Length: 85
Image 1 (cartoon, one colour):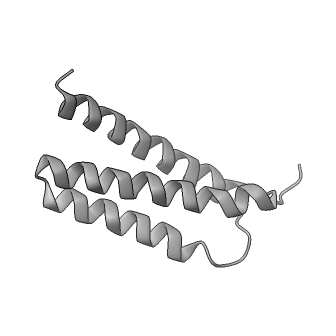
Image 2: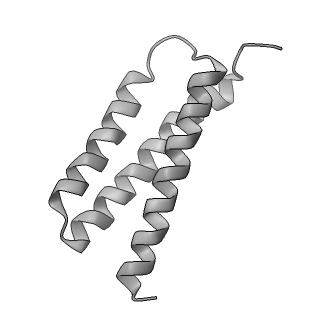
């Protein structure tokens, strides 16, 4: 199996994960949870600034995808709670 990650995925994934967690931080701030907003901003910053290293392996990319799925789940459930659905 080829162990190199495609460059487009390597460049796009940290931006997508960071944007998701920044949106989650804004949502948490609006719902009144300052602690959760700071945690979300920390995860976004940690993800974005640690992705400047060498090209990751597929295991790291799969871990980032799992973090993205979790952030998207939290964002969508928070939006549902905020809208009263």
